[in-house]
Amino acid sequence: MDTDCIFCKILTGDIPSLKVYEDESTYAFLDIHPVNTGHILVIPKRHSRNILDISDEDLASLTATAKKAAQALISTGAEGVNIITNNEKPAGQVVFHTHWHIVPRYEGDGFTHWRGTARSEEEMEAKRQELEKKLQDMHRAA
Image 1 (cartoon, helix red, strand yellow):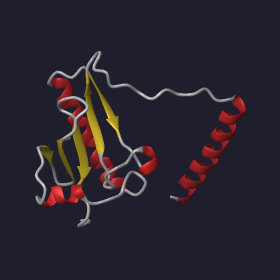
Image 2 (cartoon, helix red, strand yellow; image 1 turned 120 degrees about the vertical axis):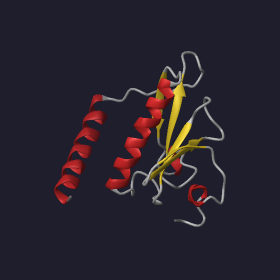
Image 3 (tube, helix red, strand yellow; image 1 turned 30 degrees about the vertical axis):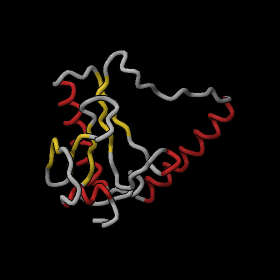
Image 4 (tube, helix red, strand yellow; image 1 turned 135 degrees about the vertical axis):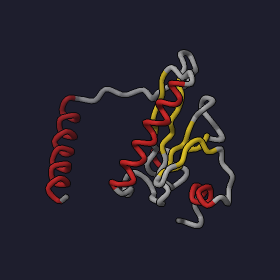
């Protein structure tokens, strides 16, 4: 636990939450500033900053709980779901405890996605090669 982390304080009961699910590894609760009603946050019980440092075991548990939350939202009327995670400040992370937003979606709800920008073939190919090499190196090191 990180004593300065708001989500760790939720886990210890120091800050109240609207829990919708809990198991041995994860905790899920309603976001207090939801995109749509039913917007769920899923967090691991063991503190990690984000997807860049979460253990594989905790990530697997987080994924399983996110799937359950998405299924619950669909079964209670959502037409779709977005599963969103922001990793590091430039990507919009505000709370530095790994968490996934499970956002219920409805036709015409007004929640929009980012707009992509076309890139040159050369730029795309250079990035593809760079990423392919990095991922191969990471796989070999594992």
